[in-house]
Image (cartoon, rainbow over all chains, first blue to last red; front, side):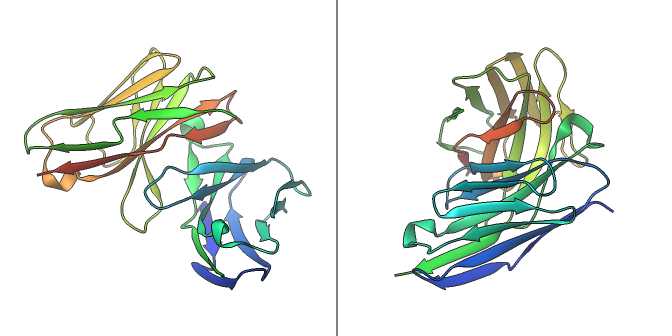
Length: 112
Length: 116
């Protein structure tokens, strides 16, 4: 069964304390993996798209990496404004309509 | 970057009335848009895939007669919640895909619906 699992479910960090979020997937054919950030009461904000194993992308304090089985979102020296829920989503080759399959999300709280 | 808007952002209605939510891609054309529903502290649940000029594809368990979707142009999709009831109260979010089947979905800001 195709699955997308994010861990941990919640993460409490001190400002400046770097950490990584995990998104593991078991799909037969990956078309793309997407990371989004969602603030309470708002729609998800696009962060990164990764298409092939070994690919890496960076934006400010965030860096996303991809292997054949999982993706990591690294947060370096986080600030309180990085507090949000981070969502991972997969577009599978066999998915009808090319829809996304989402993980459950990781809620990140960065304390000053 | 690609921008998707939704209108309205908040709507309160009486039970039995219909509510229309608009989703627009502002700076790109989208042949495919998606409608999601999100419950508190849960991830997004796909309701339907909206294709320009054709009928929407609904996910299992979603009533197509209750949630009417129209995608009349490459920049606009609408979701109409017909005969709304309190259990339809939720956060509805649309997305528009830029590019082909591997393209990125960009999300709107969401619409909070409260049915009294």
